[in-house]
Image: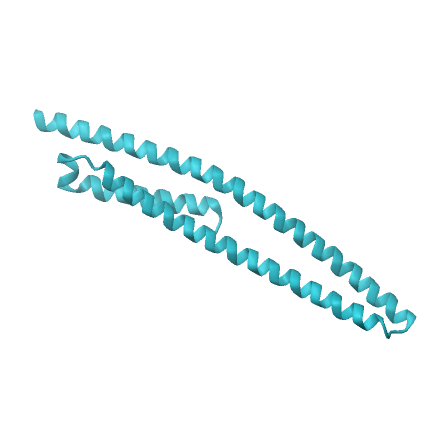
Length: 151
């Protein structure tokens, strides 16, 4: 799941919680911030857990692929020991290609880790800003309802 999808999910959960909470009679008479904060925290934790599970699955798949490449290189190196000169050249060409592929995969794994960390940090900032905006909106709604009830 992409980080932008995670942002959308958290935003929908937060907005849904806000809508449900703001529509209740209790929201008009009490301060909803602790309950809303807890719901937002739970939603953020669920998204974080899902992102972590997805990251781990991707990492495991990439590691498994890298291991398969390494295993194939080992097999080819063992075959080279008893092969003819022509076969050795073919094996070496395949080994060179596999090593290049493995190196590219390892670089991509490093990049993904960095990209995910950067994206996660940006996501956390966006989520905190969204939470702050919602809390401000809740407080404004409470103040408006208090003013309306005084009238």
